[in-house]
Each structure stands twice: as structure tokens, then as C-alpha cells.
Amino acid sequence: MTRTDDDSWDITESVGATALSVALARARETECECPLFTDRYAQYFVDAAVERGWRPPSSGPMAERLRIIGGYAAARTKWFDEQFIAAGANGIEQAVILAAGLDARAWRLPWVHGTVVYEIDQPRVLEFKAETLAAHSARPAAGYCAVPVDLRQDWPKALRDAGFDPSAATVWSAEGLLSYLPAAGQDLLFERIVELSAPGSRVAVEAFSPRFFDPEYLERQAEQWRRIRESGAQTPNDLWYVEERTDLEQWLTGRGWKVAAIEALDLMRRYGRSPAADDEQTIPRSVFIEGRRPS
Ligand code: SAM
Image 1 (cartoon, rainbow, N blue to C red):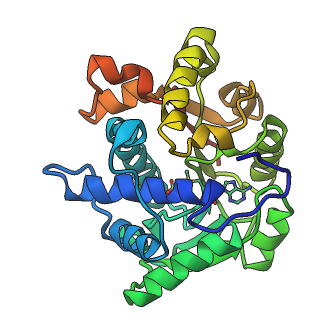
Image 2: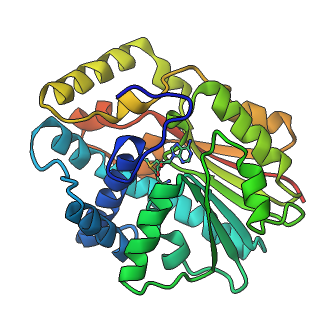
């Protein structure tokens, strides 16, 4: 599927369907013997999408890939959960989840009373989410505000119009987003985040690791994608912008933010979810970056 600068999608198509794959991974994690987190909403989303005709891959190379990256998805979810919880414990009561997809944190995390969570994603994705949660009478555990807007458009205006307060410290997250934005779009996104971030704000990001662009790794990935495509499945990398990026760690540091980062395999190890040696090449070469603007 070819991307365009103003493409849009429903939950079962194009980039929208990637949110379903994440929900599927969270539903599986929730059901496993020793989950890193529980997300009972994830299965609601999967079921609602299946009712709309979506079919999760059940066999073949794509199903195998989803199985292998389950540990990655679980570790990633846990890491972002911890970022929000730590921000709340440090007095931050405004959260913005960029490209929220089917992230159910506003419903399932123990938010500090008074916190407001803003979620940005495309309109049809947020509509599906709201309908599904309403069908289960789910209530958010914080103040909640959906901001249906494309992140390539003037989302800061939409966010302010929705009540976002740029003078209050904010915790931002970008999970499973940056690969779907071109490099220039990523730069603009972070310029805007920094502009809207009062002192004391934090940002949590999953980004391409510089190691992602290692030609040998890219070649092995291309081979995996080719096998998946031949099996008739859609491959999410067709939706990615594989372009070298600004080094976010350096960029944030240059703007006075304190930065810490951890590579995906190290994070998985930290949570006891290291992949089997044969599966290591399938794990996305991402880096998880935590930035804090001093108060
Ligand atoms: N962050 C969510 C999570 O981890 O559960 C969803 C991740 S999913 C892989 C990617 C999400 O990014 C989708 O929900 C998609 O709609 C959203 N997205 C990608 N590009 C976007 C854009 N330009 N504007 C708004 N949302 C976007």
C-alpha cells in the first residue's frame, strides 16, 4: 500500500490496522501465565474488529512474526506504562498520547486524581475506540479528551482547542508512531512538542535506533518482509518511512532536556522477555528514549 501525505484510514485498513496488531499482542499478553500488565480492553477491540471483518493472521510467516514480537510489544507497553506512572508520581497531571490507537491507558492505569489524558489519532480510529468502549460501558480512570486530528496537520491548535494547557507540565508519549511519519514530519512533531512543553514536562518515545539502518540488518528484514508478502499477508513496513532520522537523544539534549535511552533488546532483557537467539533478528531495532525538561 502506497502512503501519501494526506492519507487517512479506518481501524481495519492501512496504518489503522497496525493499532489492531498492537491490541492483539496486548490481549495475548493479558492471557499469558505471567503478564507484564493486564489490558482487558485489548480483547474488546480485537473482537469488535473481527465483527467488522478483520482477520488476525492465524498461520504463516506473519502469524509467526507476531508471535516472536509479542515479547517486544509487551516490554514496550510496560515501559510506557511506567513512564506515565512515574510522571504522575512526580506531579504531572496532564498527559498527551500521540497516535493513541487502541492504547487503553486512560482506562486501565492508576492515574493521580485530577489528571487529564488527551489522545490524538485519526478520527475514524478514535471513533472505533469510543464505540467499542461505550459498548462495554468502560469508564476512563482519568479526565479524558479525544482529539481526532492527523499528526501531520495543525494538531497543536486542535489540542489547545480541546483544553490542553501549555503552561502546565505534560507527559507525552509516541509509541508505535515514528515509523509512520517521514523524517521531516518527525522533526516537526518534536519541534511542536518542545514548544508546548512547560518546565518539568516529560516525553517518552519509541524511535528507530541508529542500528536499524545497518545495511545487513535491513537486508535480513527485507527478506522477512518478502516471505510475508509472498504468503499473501500485508506487511506493516510497506507503510513505514524508512529514512534516516534526526538523532532524538542528541536533539533533546541540545535543547536542555535530560535524556536516558535503552535499546529494545536491553529493555526486553530487563523485563525477562529476551527473545530466543534465532528470533533476535526479528525484533525491531528500536530505542526507547525518555526526555525530561528541567523544572
Ligand atoms: N500508540 C498506539 C499503541 O501503542 O497502542 C498505537 C500504535 S499503532 C502501531 C500506530 C497508530 O498511529 C495508529 O493508531 C495510527 O492511526 C496512528 N497514526 C499514524 N500516523 C498518524 C498520523 N499521521 N496522525 C494520527 N495518527 C497516526
